[in-house]
Image 1 (spheres, rainbow, N blue to C red):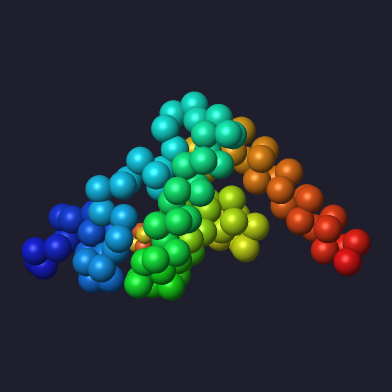
Image 2 (spheres, protein in one colour):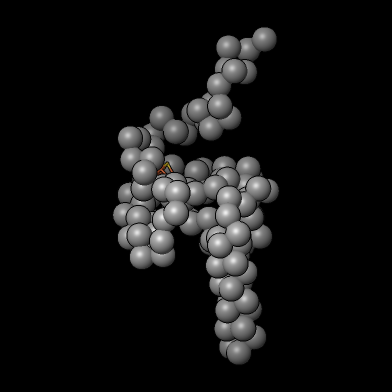
Length: 113
Ligand code: SF4
């Protein structure tokens, strides 16, 4: 039995040693009941950190592959939903409705182009 088998999956990623977001978890995952303005502000701060992170590509690829929740690799959860990487177990119905609304707007805008 490997010594890493009891660790969470995300803690076994070597690229995380180079993450610039250590200790900033509150920027990458919503607090319960987070409203839209707070989400926009939180995700803008997260995006700013990701923009200077040397492991952004590995992080984004990991989140897509594992259908993660939250903000990873300069990509919001809604952006991953639009790209076809929706979390297997969405946290809330309001998030689903918002993602569906954004997907419909995205389809409408690409159809009009
Ligand atoms: S890309 Fe963003 S979420 Fe991923 S490790 Fe870097 S700062 Fe953290």
